[in-house]
Length: 290
Ligand code: PLV
Image (cartoon, rainbow, N blue to C red; front, side):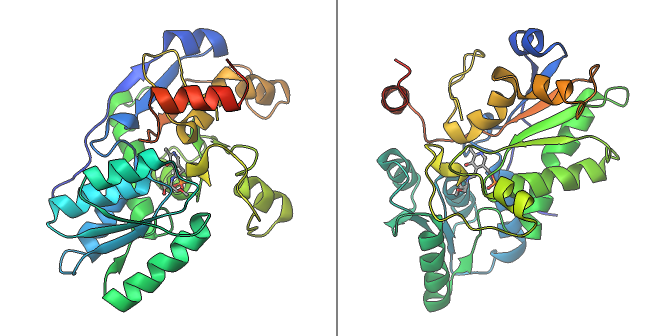
């Protein structure tokens, strides 16, 4: 079997968040993956299975899948082309280029970038790497849960898992991982942001809904941002943390949708490279939180 490219990330207990929500909160620090996010788990797994004899890979991305893809490509000695929509910050393009990717900015949102990536895969004979939409990606992501199960030991089981949702790759991986470790009755709180809420719209409609526009600042989901654990995360990741900070968990408890006495909460701190102090102050300005 091929060597794993992802690392076993720390599982930290957050005293501040635990106090706030009234049960132990564990943070799975996927921001400490070498590529900056959980995306490495699934994308490495997919590329190791499908791309080892290829001419290279092409991946449309809001940024973080691209960071994972270029990391994997470098380790496999393959070229990586990443297609970014113009909605992603310049910072993302720069970081991808620094890692050795060929970056093309195409279209205004992810769907445009995806169409271009398909085209390039076809014409240049490259392996198309989706940022979220492949069973091998979900299988790779599932390791985040199996790792947590090993860290917590046989006597501790989460009361709920909190994640951010973009295309749903992490969600599918977490579902798979919960099955793998026998935690099938653990609820998942899947957080989207208003303006990037394709899952919410689809669940409500009972079918898959494509949003006309992504109006959220968390462009990589389609979230509040700094938190109190000495780590800065991007908005896409902040969405899951916001479930604790903005009282979503307590609301679900009040509505009887989560038990009042709930077991420990597991928050997947999914990571992301699209943040620095400059970006943060720009967002604060834009969102009127100065
Ligand atoms: N980001 C994807 C899709 O963007 C990308 O191309 O990088 N947390 C972070 C930090 C993310 O970057 C993403 C998705 C998610 C969560 C959501 O994961 P998903 O797509 O598997 O639900 C358009």
